[in-house]
Length: 99
Image 1 (tube, rainbow, N blue to C red):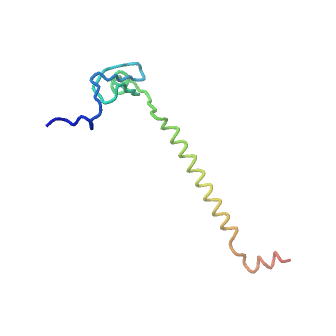
Image 2 (cartoon, rainbow, N blue to C red):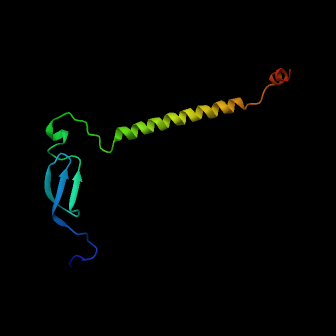
Image 3 (cartoon, rainbow, N blue to C red):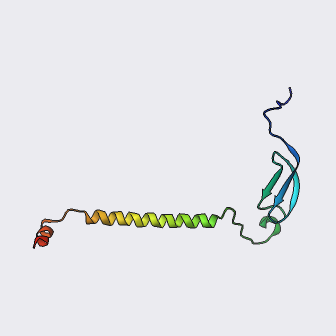
């Protein structure tokens, strides 16, 4: 019983992995070239360095969420204020406005 020829992806025995630090190594993969952000030569766990790694700009996404949350709170307060302004007036207030 052999493998079906048409359903399996092409496998590259000598696929190149290229790290942002410049390190390159070879592995077997279905992709010919793989770009990575960290490898064993530059990862803080292996190097012992205290280094901040911001992959995908997580800080920027967090700040955008904070701003969106503040806008939501502001809009909610505006709606509550409009609701309070639209409450029916008491008889006394209506008589005072009439004068």
